Length: 305
Image (cartoon, rainbow, N blue to C red):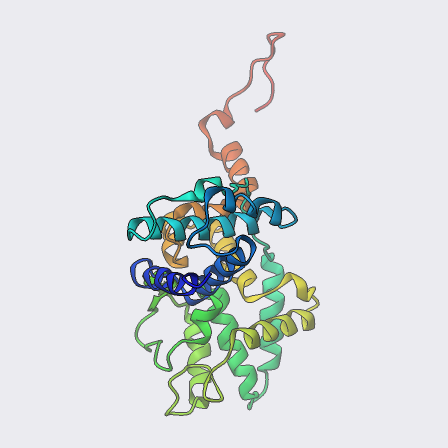
């Protein structure tokens, strides 16, 4: 296994430089590759038969975990072959489990309203607490713009210009996208901004850096619990899902939503369309030209439209 560490480093450098893999993706790949190396006794010289030992070793794992590990190994061996570091690619023996993309957990508009009602109650009075102003700005941006948690907590202090209802973000894979910012969110940030130290690099500073993803997660859970919503149903990512779902329910275009969410593949965005199926059926029944026509029954009498 002596060569594995250096080869894994080279592979991850390629993934970062050429494919724009995020830090979390790189960490997951490293963990998966190192774990597989321990099972087969090293990856660099592993044979096809040697890799066959991985399937029984992964037998108790969820299909999604097996698919992720197999994907990491296939990419690794494709890299070795392309670089001339191996004459073959033995990864075709790896399992290819059939996985279904899980449907996103969502909140109803009434539940989201209850979160904002609680925040509004916290801000009543002439001198609301600065931490409540911060919470207001965070939740307005999270739900109102569909930001990822990491994108939100790491926003620069001057990310939002007073005269521009949008910001430009660099998200997963280094892809830039334009994110519209609602008037409500801009107003919430404007009220919070005077409480941010003028020398801070971040819009939401904490210590020597910015608010962490874990801290944001905790704040969202606490807000949900206080609003009477089961905390396990709510997270920053669930609010991002709610943003997407509720926009679609309001008639948003799927391509526009893909752009706002920063999805490289529209298939990722299409997962939100399941929640709109009932509205689409109602739309067809109400607006389709055939909806107003009388049906002719087989006994020759007309039925009601």
